[in-house]
Length: 431
Image 1 (tube, rainbow, N blue to C red):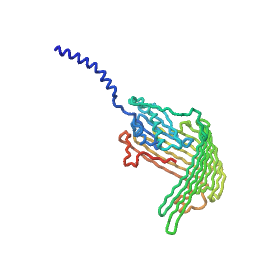
Image 2 (cartoon, rainbow, N blue to C red):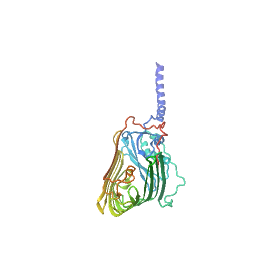
Image 3 (tube, one colour):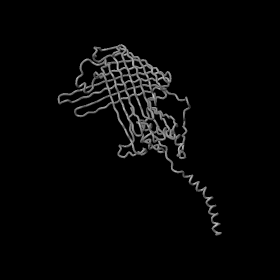
Image 4 (cartoon, helix red, strand yellow):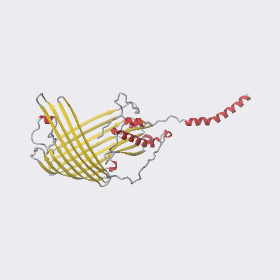
């Protein structure tokens, strides 16, 4: 009995001495935590398979309603011919209201691999804020590489004064026993963009020929030629207003133009600040133009040349929001010297997620045409109609495309497996 009384206090003392050590070992090995869940919304702007392989510390969701963070990627062209990517991080659930915007500007000469690596780094930077406030914060490590030989601000000089030039030449050839087709194209452009001015000049030419073997003794050949030049000079007036001067010259066998020239000054107003253009724009543009037309063939109005005045009103909408995208425009063009000649066109497109996994996309275009003053006199031949060698008379045009998509099952979308998939990843062509 006495021995038992001595053992109990000794055992109790041993437990007290060893308890802190046990607690310390448990604290050194924290329980497994759940990664931050993200919904990557970048469409064809990025290589999602590549991002899933490079950014492995998060879980990828199929639907934004299952995510902690919605990563919305939008783009717009830069003055240097490159692309500016705007990445909007939208907190959801426990991170609701936690938002930030990061940007990456890709130069015109960047390769697809350079672009996707840079986008991956920007996404990692944006996710730091959310991971640092998650149970996985203890696993987060941040490194910083000092820049070597960096030039001091303002010490860099641009010998091109922000001008960017670009040329492009190409063609295609294909055929079979009874048909041959060849086309050639070329273009050149010069652009300069600053916060105050946007200058853009371009020229292009296209040639296409087709030859059909109708029988052993009969062939049919068709040739179309189109060329043109455009000039745009825009002055920024404020965050909502801008003024511009537009110029256009065109030659087209399809539209019966030997030479068509239009010069038009105009104003544009954006309901939203231009600085928000990657996510939303609603613009109203009005121009008044002088037109000079020289036709290849005499028109249905017995004209070989004309000098006209016109005006155009264009309304354009562009939205890219967490619920989806929407674009639309309404254009009205009318000849002031002949008010009965006009055209009205409307375009609309949207891709909306109505609820979890269910989305609807619709694209439509309608136009009312009453200004085909360029149509050549005489009836088109059967061959010209079939191969679309010339524009035909019409009072309207329409186009409609729609689709419904529904996805269900596992909410996780992390795994990349390219087997029997043709190499995996995505491949894009950039002109």
